[in-house]
Length: 442
Image 1 (cartoon, rainbow, N blue to C red):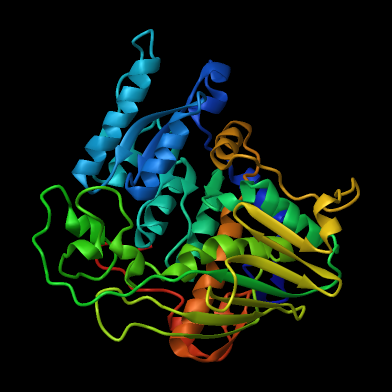
Image 2 (tube, helix red, strand yellow):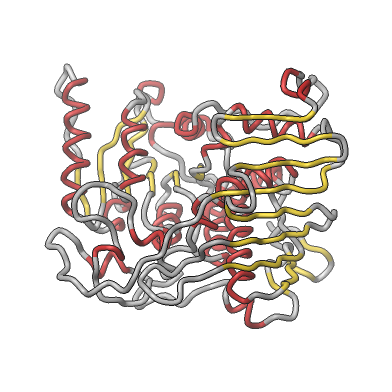
């Protein structure tokens, strides 16, 4: 149950409370956990979305003997066919007994979720298609690996987190930097006061280009475009709105506000998540947000360009999130006695002696995972907590979306992370959710 302060409802949970609620709700578990031959069973996996990111996720899981991919789903039949071919080739080379029955294909994720034999799903769809399949999967008793950012809106994130807890599912968010030892060590240095009192965190990453207006095009034969749009507003098809018809290049939808928020949730979900980890604010958020950004004046791609967002937390710590013209790529934690800088493949600190220091047995040790997919699969069998719980993913995604709202409005906003509402700002509160195109709804 959610904590309350007096009569004021709150959505803030501690990690311990979240896990306690999840364990109490775990009445449906995969066959691989309690089956008659449980130790020998594989985790049977279905993949929802096998495009650029989804194909990579699927290939990773193919490398684990404790799992077996038995179904793939995508609204692009060409991509489904390619994914099925990879899966069946992989297992046919491994099989010596002829027991592998092949990989099923689906266009509608609901048909995949209806299968009783699927234990877990990997979801790597466009951002506007994250919440609905994940919520449906939880209700269907499936464990879930969901690519970041968690959801398109803060309301979707709240509903998803609550649903996962209610149905007791194992859930992993694709924030794989938490399974990198350098990021973990950097955050442990900060959490244990090695740089003194933390006062500022600087987060930096790149931005996407814009493009001009794009003429409508015929919908490719292999694409169910209406299903691809799903809950998003109707719009005429053009290739740069969706994904390349050939190959797996960077898709255009990443740069369109109807389907995502741009790099603030793309890279922001990674780096702001690490900022939260280092600050120890994984189950809360800022109390003030102020942002500015440049937006394209015309053209199909309409998400933010150069930007700067300043978040203020209740303890006075400020997070400055900006593009790489203003902030260096990565996360810089600044304290009264030094700093720690971290990005993929690099860690630095001042004083330098911090880099060779050891976190003592009585100090804070953060969750240790050395492989994000392995961690997910291990937790399916053990029913233990994953490296990135859904509520943690929701809070990290929320920070990004709060920044997007502040940039759009160009105002300083006051935020209550307990009830997840802006103070005295109806316009901003309306941006916490979006209408869905019929017949789709939360």
